[in-house]
Image (cartoon, rainbow, N blue to C red; front, side, top):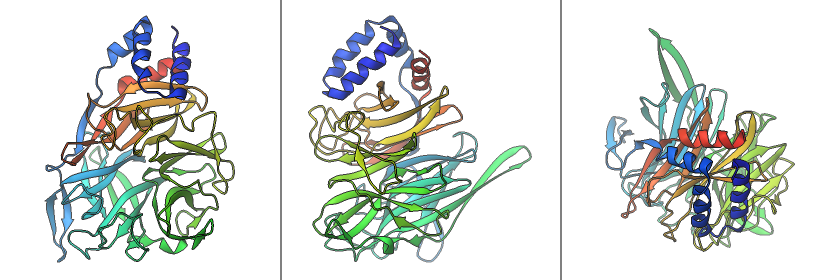
Length: 427
């Protein structure tokens, strides 16, 4: 079987997306000499624990202004970006629990030497209203020039999930901008990130959408994009008084000085979403908690959305049975070997429910889909992930969850996976 035929076979498999067929597919691939040698060479990706629960400490600012090292219970919601040659990893530092309604701040690690050494800082503090519940969480990130735009959801003290809260009185939406500077001392590269005071974007929320009163909005989570016309674009989740959620975009045409909502909204029950620009359109890849992911296209910068039926929508399921809760996904566009492709990471979730095991990587040109394979180790639970392709290197920053709802974040170096994709693109 040629690699091109292999690609087509995998796309056909994905379109039906009964994951039990993966077993048959792998048997077919192992009967192919080319595919067999590729899989044999790959092995498990090299990786390092960038944020390790119970071990990694962060510079925590006490109420009196002193900085102390504080060990963190869990790290969640990873984003990985590159700013002028500096790798930057952003995540939730969940100090006392892995729970969404716990004491959380936004932590950043950055590396000027390709990931050999890292510095750590807190980018956005919470309100400190409640020592158990105050939180800023779920970062969504844009890079433009040497600036890093980090948008988070803030809550003062509510013990409730954001959708279940009765109104928006406990909610706010901080946006902080980090300026990344890089220089050399005695031939050694050095970098720093300086953060602005966060500004609140809550006031831009439309009061009504589709005849229903809105309540709150938060980011789509993960890295987002700058469009080819220079517009900053964040996907956002919007909840209403009926406790339903849909997805829209907020945008800035003046480098973050002002922000506005796009007019277009997805159908209800789309939640965490990532966006890429593809052949003059925006492609929005959305989580749903009732079976499978939905993908939408917009040719007018999010003013209207049309479901991408026949290409990517309904392709990826939440589990082998296409039931149960969904998950955030890594989703980026990249140019590899001179060809534009989209890369997608998502757990297969053989164990079902919120286990989210076996993180997989796919490549697509919006017509064909190639299953690059599993990038996590064994049957470990690997929920949220973030992809970065830069300087001909492919990285994945992803969570690892233990049985006790404790989360760490690892940085995987997808060297063999990148070589496999190149061989497919060159076939």
